Structures are given as C-alpha cells and as structure tokens.
Length: 250
Image 1 (cartoon, rainbow, N blue to C red):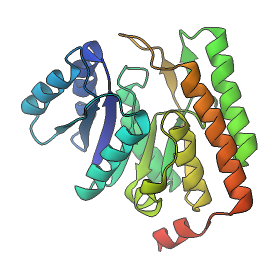
Image 2: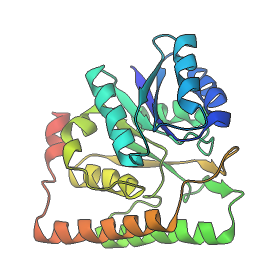
Image 3: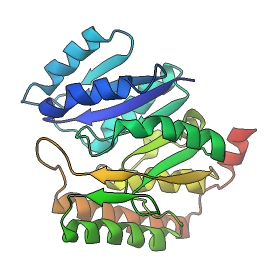
Image 4: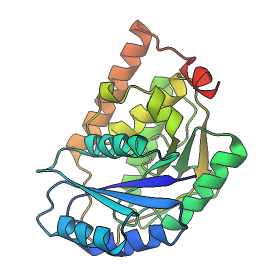
C-alpha cells in the first residue's frame, strides 16, 4: 500500500525540511507532494532540494502565485491518482499536524473499514494546544454550524488533517468542487458522506504552528460559512446520489 501526503506551501521555509523528513521517517509507504504557490521566501527552492535528496519519495509542483488551498490539494490528488497511490492525505505545512499520526490513520482506515479518516480535535483524546479562547470558539462553532446545516454527525468537519482512499477521490467529481479556501475541508467530507462512503474520526492534538504566520483570515472564514449555506441549499433543491460509495465498494 502506498500513501501520498499532499502539502500546500506558501512561505514555509522554516518548517518544510523537518516536516518532510519527519513524514518520510514514518515508513516507506509515505511519499510527499509539495505544492508551492510561488513562495517569495524560497520555500519552492528548498522543496526542489528535498526532491533531489529523496528521489522517488518527494515531488514538487510549482505554481505562479497564491491560487488557493483547494486547487493545491486537488492538483495533488490528481497526481496521486495518476501515479496509483492507494491513500491520499491532506496535511498542513506548519507542524500543526504531527506526522507521527500518519501510521495511526492507516491503521484506523484498516480496522474501521473506513473510506475517509478525519483527524479530530473535538473528540475524546483530541485537543488543541496554544490557541487563544476565541480561535477555539470560532473553530468549534464552525464545525457545529456546518454539522447542523448539512445534517452530518462529524465533530470536527473543519479539520485539515485527513486521509482519503483512492476510491473516494475517483468517485467524487473533483472538477465540480466549489470551495476555494477552508470551506474545501467541509465540502470534501460532506461529499464523501453524501456519496455513501464510511467516514471515521480519530483523535489528534492540533498544535499551533512552530514557524511563520497563520494564513487564516476573516474572508476565508466568511467564504466557508457561505459555502456551507450554498451546499445546504443545493442538497434541498437537488439531492445528491447517496449510493456512489456503495457502488465503489463493489
């Protein structure tokens, strides 16, 4: 079994090298795809050096300018599907997601018969470190809002540390994904559930970034809220096919 960890980057020079090394140390099944949006701090150049240092295990896509989190992940997913990877991960570049969880995702996928495994901050055993209270309120409130609006029982639907089986990404129409920012996390999970796939949460502890500054902004948060309302309206007007996941398993 082969797993590709997709990491979008923008100005992550201080984090990228130790992060990639930590991911690769979790086992030979894990490879890395860095998607850099023209980082002016040299992150893209460092990614190329890492590719040279770990041939066959690190790949890089360079993009001109900040094209958004969603399009970065989608580019990585398309690459992974073409290259025959069995599992595809989303993961932040700032060490807020600990690479040591990667084998646990794989084990949970197998033991639970899951198609998607979500790293959850808001279940027993999970948590957040070094966050001010208002960020925790916004995050928890966003997950609660999305869950109620979309009718899904996922405790941490806004989290960005997750693993998809290839059959999920082959079934979901990636070209029709509408979100451009953090709403992408909600939309991908929602679509997987609506398609009939088994989505399981496992506890993780989210750590505040070690280097650099957060990319979160009010506009990103507002976009996510708007996308949830839009998905809700679309589900009422045009219910999605909920048997696709069952067909994919057969």
